[in-house]
Length: 203
Image 1 (cartoon, rainbow, N blue to C red):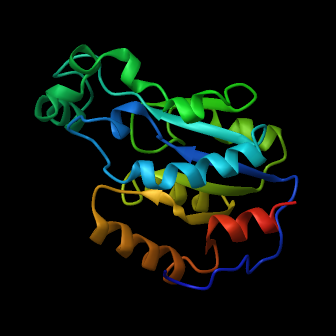
Image 2 (cartoon, rainbow, N blue to C red):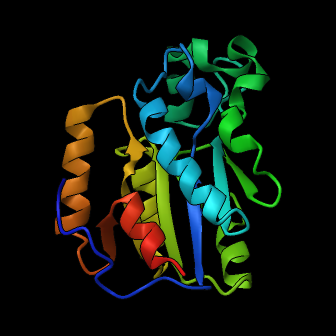
């Protein structure tokens, strides 16, 4: 594990929310975007949601409806990933994995069409309306959508707690590199802790 497993800036309280990124069937099942070790981190994520269901917001990455849809390079992207458009994949696979979908409600969902949950959504407004200034981040992939979520939150001034054993990627090398980056380069804005440490420190 990279870094010190502690909440360096103190315990978490009522101004904290849990942002769970893209724990969806299309990444858990045998598709071209399968994240093989999502099942390994899922029990950790479930523990966090069980402890704080009302404080949890799930994001869902919603792909293009048809190949060729999308602006700019996203059009080319879905020409490459035809199999992952809704027309080929099926709308049901956009859903959260069953182990997490049962928590909605009281947990909330945010749908997005790009990596970042901050673009084209009301996520920031929802959080600010609830007095949230701290985000616990779990989900996948560590080096793609989680990275985009974390950097967007940093830019908006949130305290970020990344749960190291609650993240997954299809690339072990990129996952490890991102944990090093979170702990080292963003050390004043991002804390890296395990699920056990998080739950002990979120009162």
